[in-house]
Length: 144
Image (cartoon, rainbow, N blue to C red; front, top):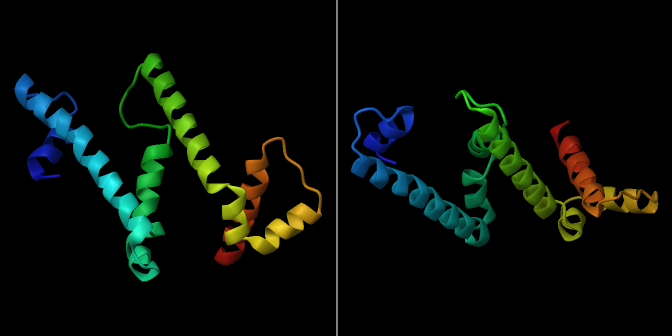
């Protein structure tokens, strides 16, 4: 994103921009990130681990994830927009957690903990919860 687009995004009331310029920028705001996300998906699928580790890491992803999934906003929003935001974020959370918490992923990332949870007879209403527990426990143990 260029400096002029950055200024536009930062200008909450969009003062000083014609309708035509606003339309152009709003289209770019939608199209550029969508294209960039597709490009990032390709990189995540095709790059070697060493290169992925330089791109997809806590330092680069944490601010993005926090910004996407945090309900709190610095802008004042009305109750209707707050409800729309809440609904969108909850749906994204569900989708992302469901993608992360597949049985195959849990078995690949945390086979030892999955074995313990399975042998322990841990049953959850949603199977994804068990897999997410295994992944979280394994990730937590790597932090220690």
